[in-house]
Length: 242
Image 1 (cartoon, rainbow, N blue to C red):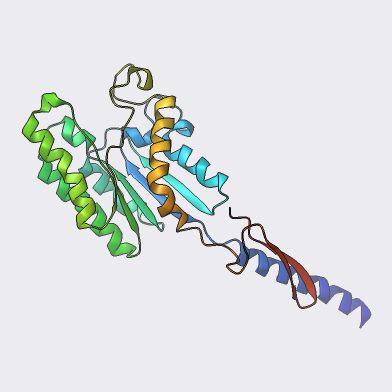
Image 2 (cartoon, one colour):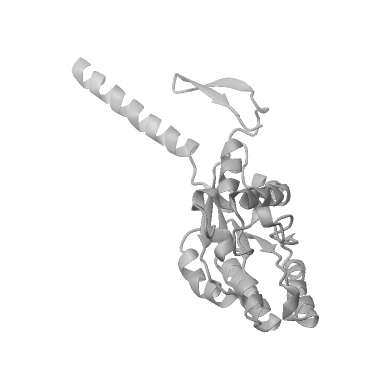
């Protein structure tokens, strides 16, 4: 019986450890950035684009949250809508919509853009009812006409209000028109420009993102360490969340 006992105990411990590790490492929450060339990081390495910089800020907090960069250069709101079903195969907890700039530059009717963006929100909420929605506002050059520009810029805050979402008033705040923060085309941000965007976004999105990061042990204060016993094994529990 003694050899059998020596075999069973390690196996039982192995199963216990696997179970505990699985319970301690839940699947990460997902923040999906659905956008065009601005989100994709056109002209720079994607690791320097603002979605990657947002991931770095999240990692610094040690939150179990993953950022997905679904930016694609040249996308209009219609193309983004067409890509959505494939993206929704995986769970989405926060949806950040950065689309519409190419619609505006092409002079597409603002109502068409609004309908496409609303369809993106509706389809996502149909699949994931608890998803939090963020709308990134955009402005267009004055040569598109004052009336068109006014209608275009107004659709983003209107969508945020209608859908009880979070509004980023202007995704390129502090970057647009700044020669040193844009590539030679004058449209797409440089690496430093993306840092400015990420800093602006973090001020708006941090409270929303932090709501996805519940503490692993709610009864522990940040940094507090306690010990617990389970089947005679002593475990160290700590909450590292700042």
